[in-house]
Length: 531
Image 1 (spheres, rainbow, N blue to C red):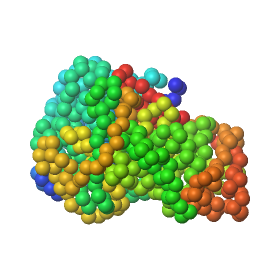
Image 2: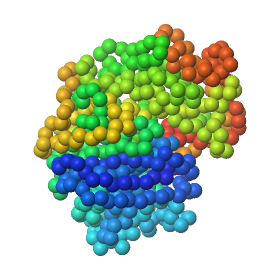
Image 3: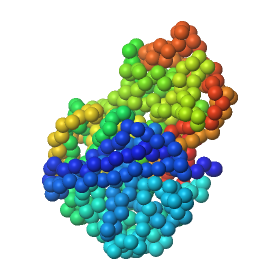
Image 4: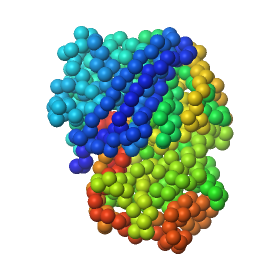
């Protein structure tokens, strides 16, 4: 593949605030609503951190949510004296790594290629190289990162971890580091290094007494929100509504190990002003990975097609996007995802949180020939890839990742909640606080290999004048479809203009498409794109 890995970031500010409850580590997620759509080579970054006193065993820190890219970024410091970094938080990978200041990429254009920071290991008095040449993440298009494993001081949200093992990218085509917090048996070292599993971030926090068990909760908040958080070692019962219900995390068939956050996706329905459609058959069960490092949601092909029919979406191979009218942002309908069978958690995702920007290189929004502005949908068909529930799903869920017990608990998120009630895990291996288990758990088998992670591709080429874009807001036998089509019809002079569907997009500019690149890192690595 000829695509380069690009990242679109927004200007992010970070605030570390005091933690609340012993035995937990709370990390706030905050973003500046202003976004920056520049590609890596032209991008600048503003980054700062404030540390306030915290109670023992608790931490609050900020993550930035890149609105265009849909990715979440964290503020950390590494070394003595500390050097600050911006890294992408990723539940779908397991290594924390940073680019080296000596990497060729980070030396180009006065360091603008590595806007999240580059590590000067020679300037750290606590740096120790513990695995020369053992850090190696490669991709099928030739991009990736290689280098050493090292140990050094790590600061995260005011908490300090000594002698923490990380990857140092001495040669990289990826300019922003990754903070992988998945299962440690999927570390790159297991496949391309010496094969030894080390204590990655959740396990190191337990080892150094910061939290009591390997678990954390994600509250990403809505697409337009300015803050959210990740809470290590506890659950914040004020950040969700309804019941918190846990489901089993399943092993993959190849290794027999639990190495990714695979759960049983068991139902999907669509609700609009005109009714509700059940989009999956009875007794449906599909293996699906919950991954904060994935921007969009990848559904099984047949299910995705029905969703497209419901929402009036069109797959544009030229743009590498699923295109919808931007007026869908005004729709009050939901997609309702069920997990773990009857009695398991159901998460309602508002359609308006699935509508992402689609921008021409001249800054204009492309339009259908009837004048309807075009956006992209945060759902695609999985094809040969695993079924992935990324940030376009996770924003609507309060998700608790329990690595010790191989459970994930889900509840409907309480958007923009200002209250907090943190309940820590009682001990190592303790059950998820305030959660019940799904009573009729459906079993699934994960056949996919590798660990998914998303980088946000800032550009896709396409001749706006030759793209055939047709949408069908009134698909046959879908009673909810007309309710979803109501918003897109509202911006046209006649209903028939919307139903008949615009012909090709207007304008012939290059098109900027945010956030549709999926990477699979596993044995030997590999990058697969949806563009």
